[in-house]
Image 1: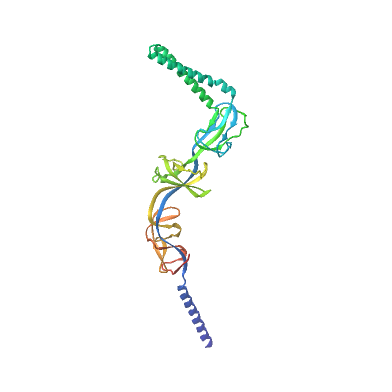
Image 2 (image 1 turned 45 degrees about the vertical axis):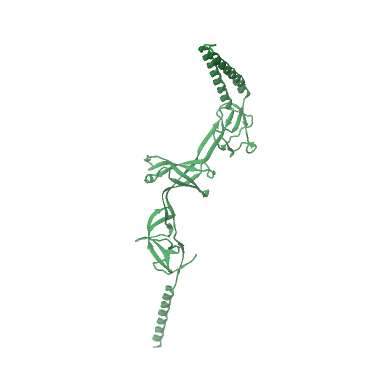
Length: 349
C-alpha cells in the first residue's frame, strides 16, 4: 500500500512540474530587432561588368629621324615623366637635326614670301592705274601663292621636330631614350590618355533588350574603390542578337572628372531600368517564402504579427512592398526565423 501511495505522489509531482514548465514557456519572449518603416526610394537595375577605357587615347610617334631631347615640364620644373598631366599643344619631346633644318631653308622662304607679297601688292596698284597688264598681275599673284605654299610646307616640316600633346591628358607611357640619341622615324615617343571620361563596352542577355534604352543611368563601381560610385549612361545599343551567346552589345559613357577610376580597370555596372519614390522598401533577407506567399513579421503590442506581402520593384538587396505593410509599422529584421504568428517578443537593439 505504501508503494502505491509513493508512486501516486511521484506522478503528481511530475505532472505538476510539467504544468509549471508550460506556464513558464508561455511567458518566454523571443528577442528581436526592429526598424520603423519609412517611405523611401528604390531602383530596379540590371547588373553587368566590363573593362573601362579612356575616351581619348593616342600613341604619338616620331615623323622624322633626329636626336632625342626630352622637354622640361613647366609645372614641375623637371623632365616630363610618367603620370604627368599635360595640356594640348605642350612640347613633350624635341628631335634635333641641324642638317634637316638647313635643308628646309626657312629663312630664305620667309624672305621670298615677303618679297613676292610686296611685288603682288605693287602690281595690283599699277594694274588699277593701267600700268601693267592683267597677265603681269596674275603672274605676280601666282608667285605670291607659290611662295606662301612653300613657306607653309617648310613650317609644317619643322613642326615635326617638336612632338606635342594633341590633347589635354596624362602621360601613361614614355619609352626611355638616352638624351641626344638618334631615333628613327615612326618610333614611339609617348602614349597619352584623357580619362576624365571613360567608356565601357558590355554584353547583356537577350531577355534584357526590352528594358535597356539610351540615356538610362548606370552606377559604376570597382572592387578596389568600393566607396566610390561613378555615374554613367547608356549611349549606344546594338539591335542585333549574337546567335552564339544570345546577348547584345551596348556602350556606357562614364563621367570620371576626378580621375578616380583608371583605364583598364574591371568595373561593375548597375543599369537603372525602373525606380519608385515615397514607397515602402524592406531588406530582402527578412522575407520568408512560405506556401501561402512571401511573409514578414511586425511587432504590435509586444506580439509578432505575421503579414503576407506583395512585391513591386526588386534589386539584389531590397524589395518594394505594394501591399501588406504600412508606414511606421515596426518590421522585425533579426530573430524572425523562429517566430510564429502572435509570438511574444522582446525588442532589443
